[in-house]
Length: 276
Ligand code: ADP
Ligand code: MG
Image (tube, rainbow, N blue to C red; front, side):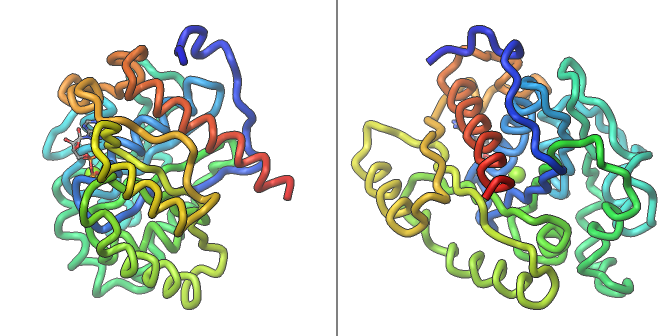
């Protein structure tokens, strides 16, 4: 595999914007890495993509080169203070067609502040409704490592959930709870919600355990699991400290190639979904 010619090839664009939450209440499974690199890959192949950083830690914002300052506006101001998304989305440096609504540490208080607001589960959905995203192809929402109100807002506002699963012991623990939450949101708040994609991350082909976990996930989730698995790659973990995705930091690395392949699968599945 090679990333030569990247950017030359255009992938299909969905008929309408696909809004995808990247969720798993476990921390450190690759949600942010997946959000950032899938978004960058899609943008590099002719799609227009917005990343919404919904994690108070703001790791996706950092990895996309959003500068941090305490007074900068963020998704917090949208959720809690009704600011418009269009005023908060900023272009990502060096990657045309990619925008980010950053998170700031204010967001850490949002779980609590949201509790007393009207329609607290639908704040993000409402913000999307007021935002003309007809010229976007994808909105990717990077969820925090919990199943609290922020993640519920993401699930109410999207149609698809992408679950990254780290290929290690305990990988499947907690997954039942995540699936039950998706079902709850689907039955009470968002009938259009579905788990569309599972991505196996941090795969270490040298261990039997990783292969066993991958087999187990595939036998449980079948076609939802992307064929591509993302290997452990030092370059992937280095990229954020340079304010970059691995797609720009080291496009030839195994991690970048894998994320590009995974994004390609997602883009081509869109056609299948729309056409089915
Ligand atoms: P989450 O958002 O689920 O908490 P992250 O995407 O932040 O997870 O990943 C957790 C840590 O693992 C980060 O330090 C990240 O750089 C690292 N990481 C993620 N994917 C890979 C990978 N494929 N290879 C090596 N390190 C990775
Ligand atoms: Mg994260």
